[in-house]
Image 1 (cartoon, protein in one colour):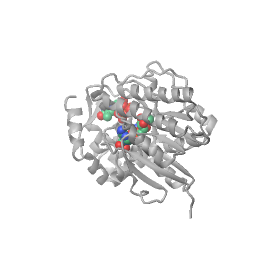
Image 2 (cartoon, rainbow, N blue to C red; image 1 turned 45 degrees about the horizontal axis):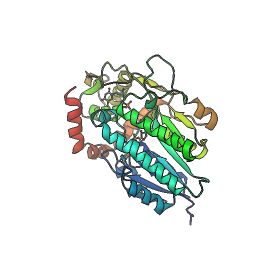
Image 3 (cartoon, rainbow, N blue to C red; image 1 turned 60 degrees about the vertical axis):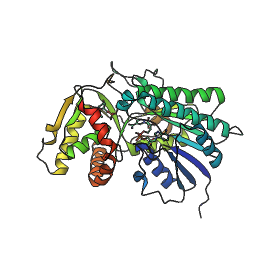
Image 4 (cartoon, rainbow, N blue to C red; image 1 turned 120 degrees about the vertical axis):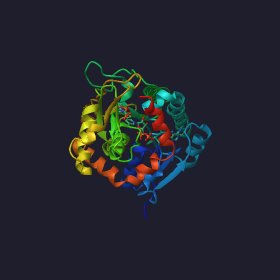
Length: 354
Ligand code: NAD
Ligand code: TYD
C-alpha cells in the first residue's frame, strides 16, 4: 500500500491545462493526494479526467474560489502542502464582454487562496509552496520586435491580461510582505486536446469539420507563440518541484506563428485527415472584424527555465498539431457535449456582429 505523504490542491483542474496537470501529477506521484478544486464553469469539464478519476490519490471538490469561507474551510480540512493555482476566467473575448467575472475569479479568487494559505501555513512554511500559473499576456504586445523576459515590465492591454497581471502582483506582494513561499510562471498560448472551442485552434478544428466559416480577426497578422499543453504540464512539474521561491519563470514554445499561417496549416492537415481535396478547408477562411485592443505579437524567451531548470518543449509543432487534430477527430462526442446548449448562444453573440 502506498502512503499518502503530501496533499496538493490544484485549482481549475477540470479545465484545459488544469486537467493535463492533474493527470500528470496523479499518475507520476502516487504519494501525492491531488485535490482538484473546480467550480465547473462553462470551461470546466469532468469528462477531461474520466481516465484518472478512480485513482486512489485523486479527489474532486466542486467549489468556487470567490467564496472566501469555502476556501478557508477547504484549507482547514486538507492540511495542504502545496497549491497549484490554475482556476481562472481565461478567454480574452469574454473579458471584453464581462470584465467583472475576470476580476472576481482571477483577482478576488486568487487573494482568497493567498489569504487561506497564509493563515493555514502560519505555523511553519517548511516545504510548502503556492504556485501561481499565469500568462505571457501580462507583458502586453511586442509591436517593435524582441521577446518577453521575466524582467519585462507589465503592460496588460485586455481586461483578461489586466486581471492576471493584478493577481501576479498580489502573489508577489504576499511573498514580499508575508514571506509566503510562492513561485509564478507566465506561459505562451497553449494548444492540444481538451481545449474549449472558444479559442482559435479548437474553434477552427470544429468549424472545419462542419465546413463552417473560419473567423480570422483583422488581417490575421497577429503573432502567438504556441506550446503543446502536455509540455506546459511538464514545465509546471519542474517549476513546482525545483523553482526558486519568489521567482518567476517564462514558459514558451519557441514557436511563433501568424494567425493566418497557423490556420492555413491546420486546413491542410485537416484536408488530409478528412480525405478532402487539398485547399478545400482553406476556402472557409473568413476575415472578420478585429478584436478590440488586439495585441499584435507575443513571444517568450524561455531561456531562464531551460538554463536553470533544464526544461525544453518535447514536441515539434507539426507533431503537436497532428496529435491535437487526431484527438479532436477521435473525440467528437466531447466536442458535441461542450458545444451543446450555452455554447451556441455564445457563438452566435460573439460572431454574428463580425
Ligand atoms: P480554462 O478556461 O480551460 O479552465 C479554467 C478552469 O477554472 C475551468 O475548469 C473552470 O471551471 C475553473 N474556474 C473558473 N472560475 C472558477 C472559480 N471561480 N472557482 C473555481 N474554479 C473556477 O483555462 P486554461 O486555458 O486551462 O487556463 C488555465 C490557467 O492557465 C489560467 O490561469 C490561465 O490564465 C493560464 N494560462 C492559459 C494559457 C492558454 O493558452 N490557455 C496560457 C498561459 C496561461
Ligand atoms: P485565442 O485562442 O483567443 O488566444 P489569445 O487571445 O489568448 O491569444 O486567440 C489566438 C489568436 O487568434 C488571437 O490573436 C486572436 C485570434 N482569433 C481569431 O482570429 N479568431 C477567433 O475566432 C479567435 C477565437 C481568435
